[in-house]
Image (cartoon, rainbow, N blue to C red; front, side, top):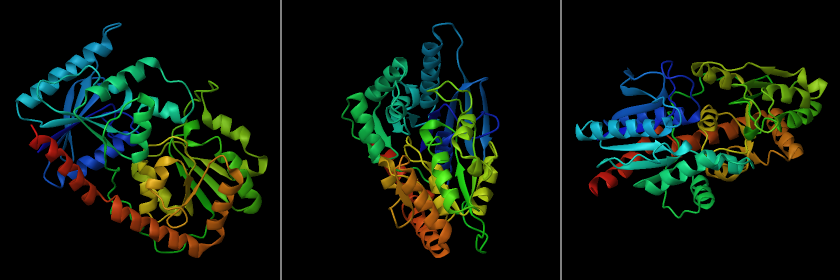
Length: 383
C-alpha cells in the first residue's frame, strides 16, 4: 500500500515552520511505515521543488506557481498533474489531504482517490473563534469537501461542526490523532517539588491565552510560589491588530503575577519533552482545536492537565479522572482546579497515571495506524 499526504506543512528544517497539522501527519506516517506502508508527503507552498527522505518518509517539496491572479489555480493544476503522474506510475495508491483552505477544491485526478481528513479548516476555527472567515477560504474548503471521495475526522466534534457550518451531511470516519507514547515517557521518577505550570503552543487568542493571565492572577494569590512557564511562537492578534499577543497578555497580569511568569519563546520540538517533564502540571485553556497532539504529549508524560471543556476535549479527557475540564472564561473555577493539583501531590500522581493509561489504550501509534490502514483498504478494495 502506498499512501500520499498533501499538506501545507511538515516538521522538518527543509520545509519550514510547522504546527499541529504537520506533527499529526508525521506521527501517522511513522506509524504507517512500521506497518510496511509506503508513505510520501507532498508539501506544497515551498520555495523549490525537491525530494528528500526523513527516516524512511519520502518528502516531496512542491513550489507554488507564481502568476499574478492565477497562482491558486495554476498551483492546483500542478498538483493535479503530479498526482496523476505518481498514480499512473504506481507510486501512490491514494492521496489524503487536510481540510485547511481546501487545496483540493479544483484538483480532480483521473483515477487516484482523494480522502480529506478534518484537522480543522479555516472556516471551522473562525466559527469557534467567533470571527468572520475569508469568503475565498470557505469557498475552497466547501468545494474540496464536496468533491472528495471519502472522509476522515480526528474528532466527532470536528466532524459534526464541519457538517453544520458548511451545510453538508457527509459521513466521516472518526480516527483520532495518534502519538508514540514511548517517545513521550516519563524518565525521572523523583517527585516534582516545584509549582511550575506549563503552557506550550502558539500564543494566540483562540488558544485561550488572553484568559490565562486572568486565571493565573487568581492562582498566585492562593499559591505565591506558583510559576507560569509559556512556550511557543508569539502570534499577532487578529482582533486588535496588535502584532504581539504576548504584549497584550503582559498588560492583563497583575504586577505580582507577572513576576512569576517566564516566556521562553519557541523552543526546538526535541526539547518539549524535557520541559513537560520538569513541570508540575500543564494547562490548555483553548477555544479552538480539533484534536490537539500537545494534549496527548502531556498526558503521555503523566502530567495532570487542566484544559478547556469544549467539544473535542470530552473525546480526549474524562473530567476528574485523567484531567480537569473547565470553561476558560470561568477564571475562578479554572484557577481552583490548578490549585487542587498544586496542593495535592497524590492527586497529581493518580491523575497523571490515568492520563497515560488513556493514551496507551486509545491513542497509541500502533493501534491507530492499523485503524487507518483498514480504512484505506476499504477504499482501495472498492475501486
